[in-house]
Length: 137
Image (cartoon, rainbow, N blue to C red; front, side, top):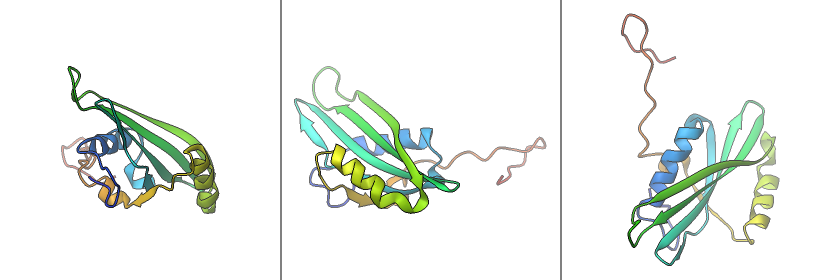
């Protein structure tokens, strides 16, 4: 997944970050994603995304960050972290994002469709009933 319009999209960092997010959060609950321009320096690339997740009557906001080594002996080394940074009522997304932007040096992130963000993430396995047949939950 390469966020369209981002000045310097990662070749694999965003895809791997989406896999990490999917491992930690229910993808079906994610209703919005914003990405900040990836930064490259001294053979490494860093990327940050902001994830909005609806859980019941609350909206939870997370940052998802990665560091990808692109050169040298550790080429391909990938580190990622997902952290909750705030929550509020469902309609508070503008206020929550304003707080995120203040913490991110006022850079305006680019919105990315969650369907596109998670397009390469395999769907969760459907548990089988005791008789061996799959069910949809």
